[in-house]
Length: 328
Image 1 (spheres, helix red, strand yellow):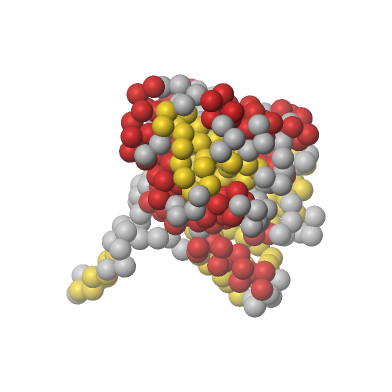
Image 2: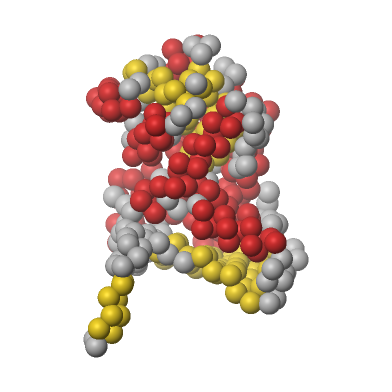
């Protein structure tokens, strides 16, 4: 069994702690959170102990740390865990500041830092990626990524999230790089706050259309919204020389009804923890492989910095209404 600690007892920390506690090769030993009640509740539910970070990092039995705390603490906890010789599974983004993330390169073990871009582990998106790169439909020419949330997050979260591009769209920037197979070199984005006026008042946006272009001329269009009105909309379309490859939405069930009035299906899955449950479990499998030396991280430091670079360029484009060259 591979002993680990989880930092963060919030929503995403609970998901990772639950998956770790159920994993056949992982033993969840410690929960760390500044809110004592939250740490105690999650520790009780997952069979772990409450500890502080110093205690967990000093324990030689701990082989890895999951960083699922607030975004502004990610980079610091990654550096501390790396210094203590632990493998690290860090939630995205690595940091809210590109300069700080770049400056931390020498302090992180790139061979044992796994960054939680969970959509790469979604079985549907992974199959789409693999079929595109198999060449069965010819070369990929353009990509269309749709990522619309069912409803906006609480405004208190928005204010500390780093903004939609770094909090939400950063997943799509990573997916674009992964599926395109090359880094975009420029971005144009137009964004607004039409869903919730409070988001605009907080200096953020809730709706965006983004165009990425690669050096080879491929184009990726990303559509983002904090409110769909019809469920959690997660689709990718890849237009290739010989046709289309598409990964569609996941419904709450496959049951359909047919009558004289027409046909209908059950609604889309309406929460990201349900939609990506398989992906979160697959991430934990991969972290176990990293812990016992079977694998190197499939998503790491360089991917985190690159996605953050695109996010900052997208914000610059939005603010200047201009095409922006991405500086990696």
